[in-house]
Figure (cartoon, rainbow, N blue to C red):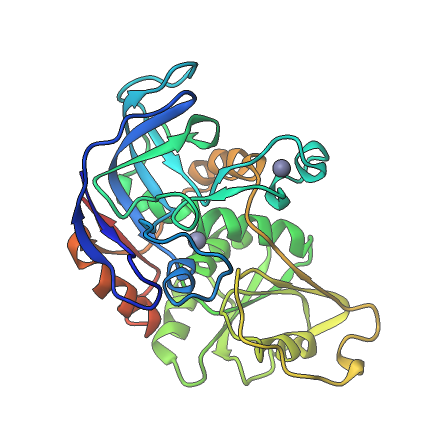
Length: 327
Ligand SMILES: [Zn+2]
Ligand SMILES: [Zn+2]
């Protein structure tokens, strides 16, 4: 097998040839067809997440086909198309796992961060965390659903039922969430980097009612807002944009520091919450819903060997929607 490997925090990924791996008990080997590129991959590479495992193969939006099955795996067959998400393993016994909050597991493994991921020709996954994908949709267009879609979905559920929804940062996750929210009868207000008229136009093509810079106030108070951009300075801006009792959801795994802000922005029962990881039920719910809604992902493809280019383009916002690596 070959992979784009992170050998040192802060360094570019390196093309590496590795011996083929065999799935252990309860595991699958997957021939990777497509793997989405997520901002979390940048946070891993930049050393912004605690206790990184290096060397590591990043990538946690994996679409591929099972090409070897470990002992004890039931219900998943050779050749089946599956998706492998960020949540790679949970302990099953900690209070969070037992209490139905496996996204907060005390001893988890995360794909592409603490266990090898999908920037590779092949990967090993825990079969319990593989989602069957069926045959509808291409590998490339499905890949962004595995994190941008799933985390976006969890964030949308946590944002509540409000009809006026703000999205700060209009990239891979927001362009999927906008389609779901619109289908649910909500109005989407998209906030981009100030002056980024190209992304604002993209947001409007994805169904946003209004699009503007994050330094602008929305035309009317919002019921809820989700912050996808890793920018702490957006927190007070989003609190200012929501109505009394409104909720602001921070969806990213890492953010720059949140600046201090006057208490009156939180006053009147506004809520500020974060979303961490995903649970398998999020994946099952969302992947069932996605084909019904007919979510169309906008993707830019890169060959696996150009992973560093894809990551650089994500960092500087050079494409619309999501980047996907293809084997
Ligand atoms: Zn646990
Ligand atoms: Zn991700």
